[in-house]
Picture (tube, rainbow, N blue to C red):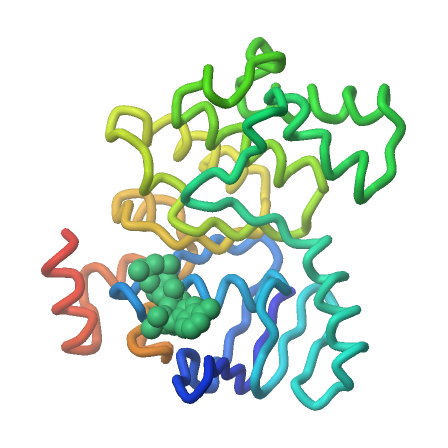
Length: 246
Ligand code: ATP
Ligand code: MG
């Protein structure tokens, strides 16, 4: 479902991803861990087609982008990839002047070109999946952080993505609001959604992930099942990381 080969990303002279090889199957829940600056967000952005690659290749759902393709073709394929991968951000990124439902239906109207009633119908279904149908007419400023993030998830779901990428979805939330967002993510996992999650929620990682990937300085250092990773991290770097976050 997702494959990268020798994926590298350089900003100016600074290489932030070094020859990343990834294989993610449909239905897998992958938790991506690593210290600040290790390249987690950049990797997600590359997989989402938000960031161009400097070397190597990416294949998402049979759409391949390689660094040797002509720019125009690469951009076209990145756009196709973006339409099949949902992304949920730490800072929600909701439109403040649109209601919860308006936020969810925006891309259905603009990208999928659904007519108003159809978009509303889909939007309401997505809001009810995250338990927020009764808040559909509220503006983001009237919603709690946890509710805003659930709208963010409903918005990602509305495009019927094959994969959802989560970049620290609960890091901006007050502790008591984290659980409701994780619960929505757990239910998506149970429904078989393919997910890559950058998170500091180690309990979630242990309970929900099929695979843990640990990155440091732009490289994948370890890749294993959660039990092995948390009980017997193979590298000193991962041990050091875990001793700080657990
Ligand atoms: P954090 O846990 O703090 O979110 P991260 O693992 O997500 O960190 P990235 O945000 O991917 O790390 O950043 C990896 C490296 O790439 C950092 O050194 C960062 O400064 C650099 N970087 C990221 N985006 C850019 C950019 N647009 N231009 C230049 N450098 C960038
Ligand atoms: Mg990040």
